Length: 107
Image (cartoon, rainbow, N blue to C red; front, side, top):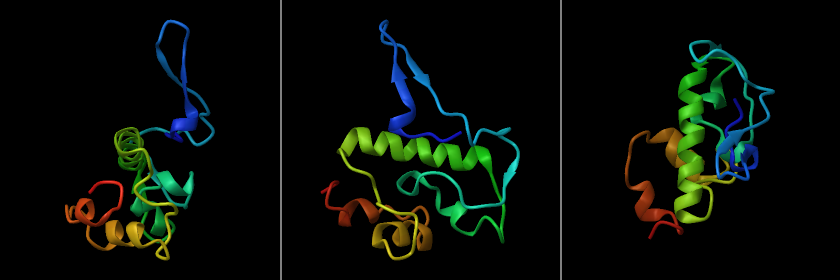
């Protein structure tokens, strides 16, 4: 699924609904190509053509980006490319919490 703020609707009853299932697939399937919106893309998708990754893991990452944006008002990175220093930090240092020390929106 393409989880991002733009794909969440709120009904008149206040119920959240996902839309745009263009990339949807079984959670246990492997993704073998770079796909999705760049500012929500999991680091694993960067090399998906050489090292496929599970759809569930990439969706969880995108959901985390969505929560990050709701909390801090900005995405953790602008583009899932090494030229983006914050994406590069996440890709090269997975699990390193120093990310929150250096990002301008989390200080």
